[in-house]
Image (cartoon, rainbow, N blue to C red; front, side, top):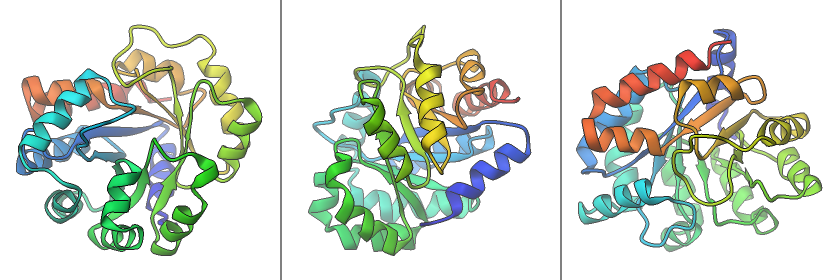
Length: 263
């Protein structure tokens, strides 16, 4: 396992803060300008960067992120180009900020599991999120990632039964990603009333930090969840800000979310 992710959570905790995992789409609007967006996230206080890889048939992405993926694909973004052109430059600019790739299993398989894990680690990647990989089928890939020093980060859905959620959490790497709402990514005015209880359950079982993602877009929501999770993931709100107003708007939104995560 990489260790960088654990250090990022420890630094946030030492400052009396929850961690902000900031999501962006690599290659939106193009590869070079997406580097500026990721850099702005860190300048705004992001503790971990989730680097989205454009994919034509996502299962988890709502309309905002789907739009970003379409723009990135039109700009020529691929997993290889993200690893060659985006990740190394972001890592150079922000060496202490862990980078987590978010993509889909067939993209990894097309590159080759071992090749991806080795190349990702060499370029500065600390972890990966694969939302279409069931935990029961993740053993071989997790072993490959472990050997390379890349954390395969598991997800728990709102519909995941308690026993299965506890089993997922106990075998977690990097952090456990608790999906806040059923459905796809996207900003929500309200989060489910049972979310805090679900986070407490997973957190109790997990040896690694637990974060909540999907639907979180405001400092107030981050503040509410900070008592029950070690951090939050913010995606659609940042992608929308980047597309509409550019890196400075992304920096300001990250700073606002971080204020909500102060304990």
